[in-house]
Length: 259
Image (tube, rainbow, N blue to C red; front, side, top):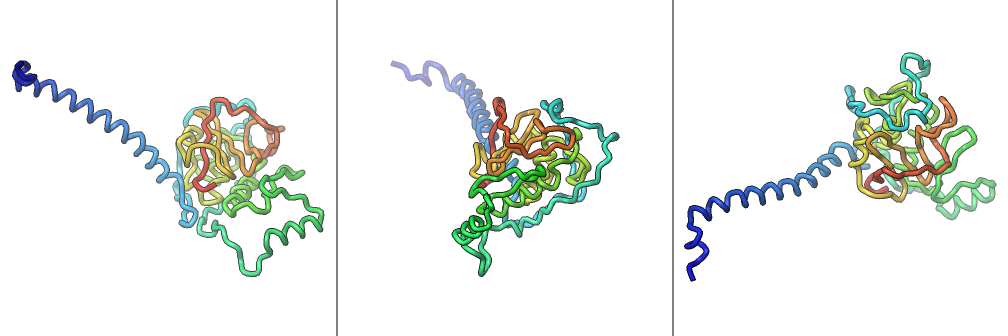
């Protein structure tokens, strides 16, 4: 029986091999491309906790699509808002390290002191203070403390669509601007991101301490179990920190590495 090469011919066999090789190369490129894009995204937006970094002086970001839950956020126009500017987030991540200072009380000693003083701080869940700010759990990592501190700094700021995107320093913040500010305060972000960016940020899935829920039009997060969200506030100056649960249907869960 004549061989396949003899029956088809060397020339025709070469012509058939070219498109097959091209298709194989295309599939390889696409498979590797998805991974490289995610790796590049992490490199651009996720900062190591032991590397000092801050937002560049000219930090900008495109606002992207309209917040899908803007109707639930008591939005105000920038021209109508009379509010002081927020301070710049404390983005020096070098100080965001987990360590125990010399002479510091142990966890057991802290628990005894809290019990003696009648202070009911949770071991691993943040609580909502009467004024609308959040109280971090006593055993939270420094990075979580700093995220909560950042959220507290703008907890009742006005909602302005696009707020916090031209600069971290603003007089109002939209959903992604609010989340970006809080994360930047812990050195976890070096520039504001839009809601859709967070769908591919950090690591996929829920985190131990921080879980960000993102979609193409809205983003919010849970920090030590407490919801931080521009949607669902009680009014134009209502707190972004909330205890009420909400549906996360259609959202993608991600978290900062290690948290």
